[in-house]
Image 1 (cartoon, rainbow, N blue to C red):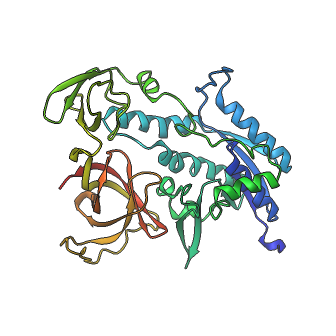
Image 2 (cartoon, one colour):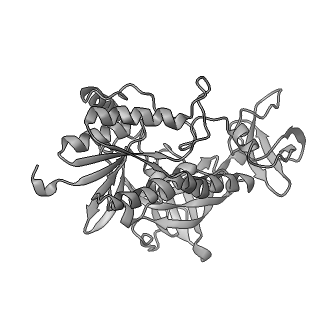
Image 3 (spheres, one colour):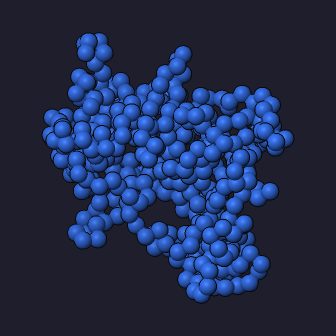
Length: 374
């Protein structure tokens, strides 16, 4: 590698295998690598040891940094996390919606104050262990899906903008997870066999019902069928989400599924059967669109075959790991988008994000406000 190509890169090291390999690959390429651990949450404790989970994660990051011979900085972003992510998380649940904290954590923490810290130490770029890719085309940063279809995380990164993506590297985005594990063993990294993290972004694996109950006022209410019959009670509407089956405590016969939540009545609406029509929608209304390029795709009339609907045509997904669905998108007043699917969708959930694609390129997305069933 030519000396002129060597860069100073601040790598977000979470203590997991993906970020560990990302740092190792950049070091192997000849870059000056500085590791950084983000302390965003300190309340969650290990059930067995009683020790705050972030300390264990930082210890793993320190072991990896030591193995690679690089420094490891620690940044305390707990205030930013609580203000930007936790408050959003609780506000959305209190309003009867189901939020996605991972999306907001990327937007407001991982690629916000972290990027600012990189600039302070004179880093040319930041890097993370996300499974995604950035390609520059005529001066424009394009976000592409990760090569591994089972690990692609472009869905969670769709709120990033040009200024963030131009200064970001995703070293493992072009690899399969199995290849990342193999490289971790070859680099003899302490995290090579570590399991992937689960749970809420940075908070960890907690019982959502208990987490919300400790932070939101308890408002018991009815569980009601779609035809108006009260079949049970809930202790708080917040943790229920569209498509949920378990945790309803409604016995007997064919299982019930959550099909809606009525904030005004403080009611959880249910229907029997995994294929009940109330679980499905043909379209949705989304708000607050964000476009990675800084502007929306072109909107030439493009009639969907046999549908008579006009608008931009491409692909979308309404949840992580969902296969891409064919859609047409029509812009409306107030920045709203109507997203109509070629095939009806199960469990369209207000508060989640619909993310738009042109094949492997992630274009941006918007927050789902309501579904359309016809």
